[in-house]
Amino acid sequence: MININEVLETNKMIEQENLDVRTITLGISLLDCIDSDLERLKVKIYDKITGTAKDLVSVGKAIEEQYGIPIVNKRISVTPIALVGGAACRTPEDYVEIAKVLDRAAETVGVNFLGGFSALVSKGMTASDRLLMQAIPQALAQTGRVCSSVNVGSTKTGIDMDAVKMMGEIIKKTAELTKEEDSLGCAKLVIFCNAPDDNPFMAGAFHGVTEADAVINVGVSGPGVVKTALSKVRGENFEVLCETIKKTAFKVTRVGQLVAQEASRRLGIPFGIVDLSLAPTPAIGDSVADILQEIGVEYAGAPGTTAALALLNDQVKKGGVMASSYVGGLSGAFIPVSEDQGMIDAVKAGALTLEKLEAMTCVCSVGLDMIAVPGNTPASTLSGIIADEMAIGMVNQKTTAVRLIPVVGKGVGEMVEFGGLLGYAPVMPVNPYSCEAFVNRGGRIPAPIHSFKN
Image: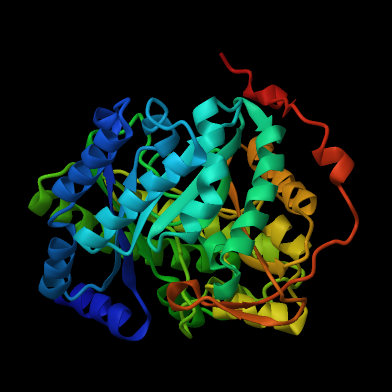
């Protein structure tokens, strides 16, 4: 039974400590929409999304009002479009047409973002995959709510370096086509290794082919709650620290479980997972970097940061896993630079570099996320950064991702404003030395020996 003290405690978390449900994401399979005629395919996709998601936003708002729990975003993820469009799409422009239909459907039902303009190419690219990838820059420039992701590696298959090279070039083209908005299109594009099928967070969400026809996935967030809890145990040993994080993560995840079950019941759609990640926002007091400082480092990036993040990530998972029937997605701690005021401050102070962020990604949930770099960064350098991050995910059997934004016309130290939850960021320096010969080799980096488990 929930007692009055727990109710009051949860209300305090919401009102004073930035506790929220970051997103209800409705995953929708589009496999039954496949058609060899592009016009029929577009109609089927629009009808399937708008029919399935017609009540998503209204139900989300009703749950907010009934329980007093903020639900920041209502989102949709769909089957990777490279799988859906292969029979009908003959050119990149055909895929851009599908992206526009997805955008129109998202606008019709009122969701913030729709993810799934995606391709899964960890071992090789089909003709359909290539066409979709070539379409990404135009698709993101000509839509407002569509998000794109490409999975270029996995522990089981290795890393498709042809795809890695191509994605460096695609990031550059996307930046150029959206340069009037500080290259904002790149903020809606994620490159993955070991991408999960059930991630509710954007921009990397897609509805995996192993999923049901439709599912409800929920992402919770509570960096401010964890930071406040830790402020009460300053100076205590690591045992007390870890217990505090675990107990707090449990409480935060219970809120997500409640919302997920209620949304599932009201929509008549199965509950998928709760992603118990600590996802920050630019709001003061809603920062993962602030938690690291509370643990004991002066700034994120100082010596000890990677160890502190590893501890935080592990304890969040240990505390949250008992609080939900099904835990999935990414689950842990996110470290997006532009979306975390503490990370922004650390970059400004010179405490946090790209290389230190890469080290931190070995122990957190995602990877190099929402990082602004100079607009003149070569495509091959972007590909090299992607390859490094994919290697971390492949070898460590974890999800890693890259969301780099080469801001056209901006240089190191200049500020870039993305707006909303995407925040703002200082442009960070990139290693000036070339990896072009490495990137241009072509082919595939083999999977590590520990992947051979059959």
